[in-house]
Amino acid sequence: MSEPLLYRSTRGLAPGAGIGEAIAAGLAPDGGLYVPEALPRLDPADFDPRGSLADTATRLLRPFFVGHALAAELPAICAEAFAFDAPLRPLGQHPGVAVLELFHGPSAAFKDFGARFLASCFRRLRKPDEPPLTILVATSGDTGAAVAAAFHRQPGVEVVILYPDGLVSPRQAHQLGCFGDNVRALRVAGRFDDCQRMVKAALNDAGLQARRPLSSANSISLGRLLPQMAYYAHASLQWQREHGRPLNFVVPTGNLGNALACVWVREMGLPVGEIELACNANQTLPDYFGGAAYAARPAVATLANAMDVGAPSNFERLRWTFPYDADLRQQLSSHSVDDATICATVLRHATRGEVFCPHTATAMHRFEQRDRQADWAVVATAHPAKFESVIEPLIGRTVPVPPALAAMLDRPAQAEPLEATDAALKAWLLGEGAEVCGPEQARRLG
Ligand SMILES: *Cc1c(COP(=O)(O)O)cnc(C)c1O
Image (cartoon, rainbow, N blue to C red; front, side, top):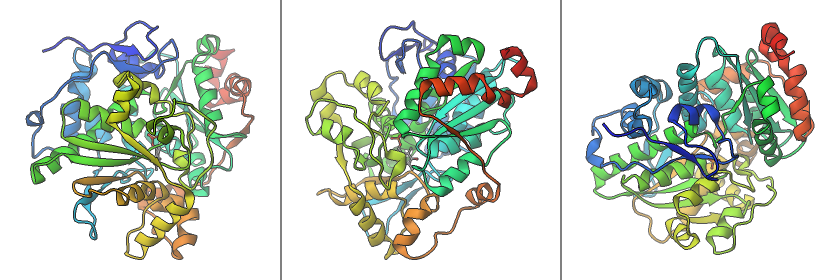
């Protein structure tokens, strides 16, 4: 068997880490993001054609875990994380397109896969005598619910969710606040980028870490990124077997975690063709891929709010994958879709009986703009019932709520207000927020 894969920081100033360390840490010590030293190569023939999504995930991820104790656990971890399917559903009116439905998990968005994989890894990485770990999550809506659902009642872990107050849908806010037990929700008086900055600052604060051990579960976490590759591998291998051609993807994109997973699958040698990043009115990526210098900027609020990102954190990993701008711009395309077009797309498909969430509609519109429409998958990142306040008034009827989501909405919800400053989060984590740890750990924190 080959040597263990080493993980390095995108910023190059941290020592190499093993997979366990990279997953546990979230962010590298130099503030960069962990990437494998080199992406492994695989052959489509390495995969069992009759294998389930969990089997594909296990085979795909094996080289990333070689030499670590988690390698032996990988089949069990993948069975837990991929306990529900990611079907590639043909779309009636376009023969060359299928919808890759990633919303059949408990929180009804694709982030369930990554969050559950991460939770399964954490459960196995934790030593019994370790102090409780606090997982900080900045969310523009969907990450928080997926992470909360995945870690709810897991021993030795507390989850603290930060979300921009008033900028998530009422149902999303309810999901974030409905867990209780080891999960606390903070509604921040700012935007998603503020929440993300506050989490990064806390993770980089050694003094704070010494008093309250922290980790992250954002899409910067390798333990979420790696499993997201599985559904692209599974779908593209299936398409290749059935049609003899690679599958192209349009991916609704915000922080670039989901799309980067697709890029890495192609780099590993699996049959992924073109990849288009469909963005909302946040122009950072479309402008860059259109030829402008990369320039992060403040996020603007849109109807596809889980993609309201002005500074996509995984861009650092994309740069690591393709260090030269000219090369990177050849690998991907990216376009912006405004709110009016999102509404028109939702409405047009609803009249044919297909209801898409605003994020999926962004990708659907981009697919429809293409000249060549064979062999495409439009990635459906969330169930439309999560965004009822946008969708229902538009289409003039209610969207049936999937059972797992309905169960969450039946519980009472609660969130605490927080100022959008790094100091406010630190104070909360060391002060009243320490209550979440229970009396025993609060004593240890002094
Ligand atoms: C998070 C999310 C996205 C964006 O995914 P990134 O990995 O941040 O690019 C798109 N759609 C939905 C529904 C999401 O929850």
